[in-house]
Image 1 (cartoon, helix red, strand yellow):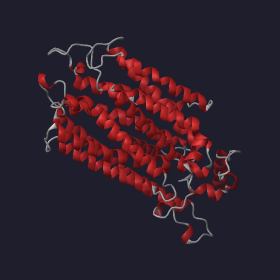
Image 2 (cartoon, helix red, strand yellow; image 1 turned 135 degrees about the vertical axis):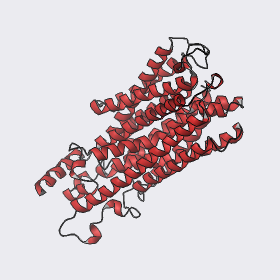
Image 3 (cartoon, helix red, strand yellow; image 1 turned 30 degrees about the horizontal axis):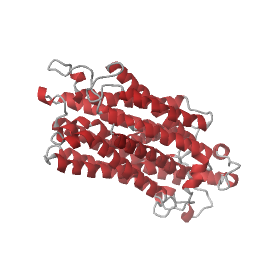
Length: 458
């Protein structure tokens, strides 16, 4: 067994050899004992056997991380119903949600990234999940209890958006840092889970809308009953994620205590890292230092999500080219057509992230940045579709769905390649900090993209 542990330790040391230009890297002084500090078990090492349970939990954490954000996007038709009495809110509520969410998320991510040395990443994760449970329960109650006017309801919604954005910042910072101690395959699980978070809310929205009967006058907006079921589903997802994360923590702490106990250590030095989260000791890595090492990958990431933010704004404005009549199939009425369009984009995003697990970009990082920039062509392609029912300049519904799917694939693949590649080009002691930094870059792209969409008035 000692030979096996020694062999894995040598492999890990070789995998994170110090860069010649990295004076802060710790790779040159690593010992087998150092390597074992941040690793759960031998099967968690990159290149080793994959733990299905850990993969599933990280996938679910990625799903819970972005569920609330996608929830606000996919529930656009219900919000249209609630804001029907105000032309300004009906036109701008999606942009207000985007700006409030991304600005709060950006501020939270930056604040959390500046507090690396004392960060308790597991605590940030479970606190985020608790906030999500409370938030979605409040939104579910708002569909049947707090029946107020558009002005009052936008206040409720934006307050929920701010809490959800802070929760997402906690989750992004915690999960991206925590998963980097397990290996690259688990980062791919998180990214896949994020894409699933786009697919499942859209599916849940479509199912709840179809299950609840509607009248002809209600065919353009989701009913309160369907929204209630939808938000209740989100509560269940967060609760399940919380339960499984605590199970992962318990197994992680148990395995580190069992597998990393040398015979000549004292009780003060054998405590698992996760058992004493209140007093962690980490080297503070300046954000500028990380940016210099990751400038092309970081730029590719924020550019990807900057362009991606055109998708939610256009998707809730584009309707079917078929005229809306009493005989129009339910698939082409706005209350189903809009969530279906979100689903198609997110299926593409999921496909792109899964594709990254099969083929990752191993060429020059500069090329990945150019690919991210080239995605801007999807914006005029969406603008040429049937925006606000004013007529499509190019193609019909099939063309629109094809554009959405390709847009999603490009977002999922480029973003995942940048995230997975980042920990490979820094020293071992910087891997946790890289997770928070790349999460911050992602949020910068989201914030800049939503602000641009709001200013342009898309």
